[in-house]
Image (cartoon, rainbow, N blue to C red; front, side):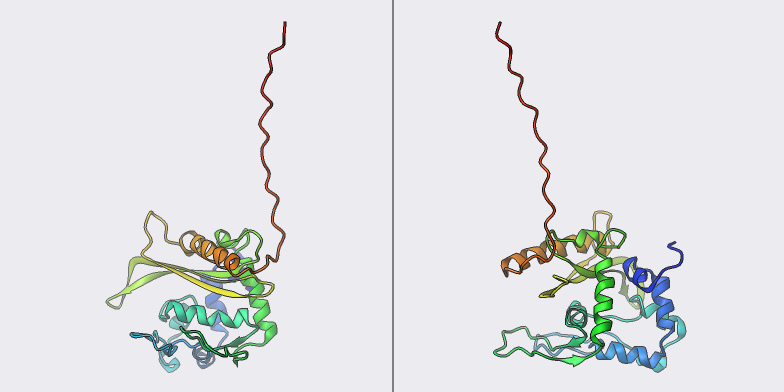
Length: 241
């Protein structure tokens, strides 16, 4: 148990209890409208065969316990692409633009405003805390770049019942000072005795994001830590008699 937490620490430490308490402060309709505005419960219309919209039930059917559990991922389902899309609001100061799987001649420069720029920046700072020591995803850090993101660990739904199988995820963006890329990683039924998003998905995110930033020539936004090289002792030279 973590004891008394601030909102930032609830995000940093991925507290289900704290998240449920925050959700309880919303009216069901208000919370549903936020999910709907982020694109949950509806296809993204990418033109990709078999695309689904996930599961977001009408708010009038919610019970209080369901509203609490939806806050940390139970009772609602989204695709990985929907999660990556939703994170744009924090990388883009609160606005959401449509996605495309093909190159556009003129990409949209402005989108639909979901949150104020101040709110988006404050959440961005909380997501950066989740990657720092004390958070759930220090393995998502990348030398030379500020990273922000959030872990996800969920039971799989099989036949309408949550099974003892997991999906581990990490979604984040970088560099925090001027976000260029959003990367979402999901590991279906991780093995080797680990299933938390911070242990399984975050390291994959770090490798993919690091390679992508360097390939695109994105400048680092924090100094690189100096590498310390241990010195080997000088070989002993026998004295001449």
